[in-house]
Length: 386
Image (cartoon, rainbow, N blue to C red; front, side, top):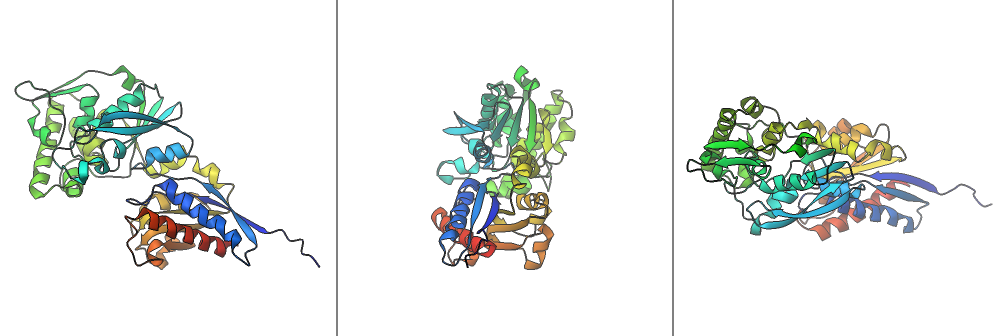
């Protein structure tokens, strides 16, 4: 007698963040999807896995790529990198919203030969990218602030947006951490395009600009700053704030203490000066990329990032995805996980797969190995679902 039972079909939404240093969110999703689909060829497997890919970002590096993968158009532009060298950067635009990110304009990954420049790096390229976005007449610009190479309080960014910084001899200052202490006068030329455009800071960093929890102390060492550099940068930023207040910028001192002012080496502070509205990076990008509608047609949500740890349930992207997934089965994939099994329930996770469980090698800087392991994990996930 022939069975009339239809083969099982499982609909999955693959919605990961990047695996930093190894694969983009899109590459992670593609590798997992390849593995999930290949399970149909395994003897004894009765069914198929349908895959919908939704690469994500949380406002850090990879934000432009995630927007492009979701249907935005990539627009490329040559601008000044973190140490002034020309770099080819891109923004994402859908006719109404532009996404501009620090990482691909003045980020750590753009430093020549990877040489850290704690005092000399500038955020000017990010300002130039904002100018480029303004030329497209968007209704809003999303400012993604992760991965900066500089700690200049956004001085370089503001210089690109027609803010003039001069030293005691009247010479124009380019904008860098080193230049902060040299500021003698500040003058602003209003950009009408800025007045007509909504600015949105997408970030989940809550640090203020100054002090023991400020940008130099917390993030400076990651950018090559030693203890002396940290002290110099903090003093320079304090001088920067005082000069802005002296020049009549409303709220200059109060904004330095605002949550998020210290993000991206203080670029968050400069964005606040421009009147930007702060939002949760993870939640904003889930809305921007239409996660809620996309997950409604799926049975299983697969998310993940390079590292899952004790901080992940507190609001990182996989936690935001899990929170919105409802009663659907949620599976996480990561390069490594430091989150104990008993904590999986904090995010309603059914299972956590890690690359570290599949190899003794370090996959964090090996894209090819990471992709191979993700394909195997995808196949194993599919086998468990069918």
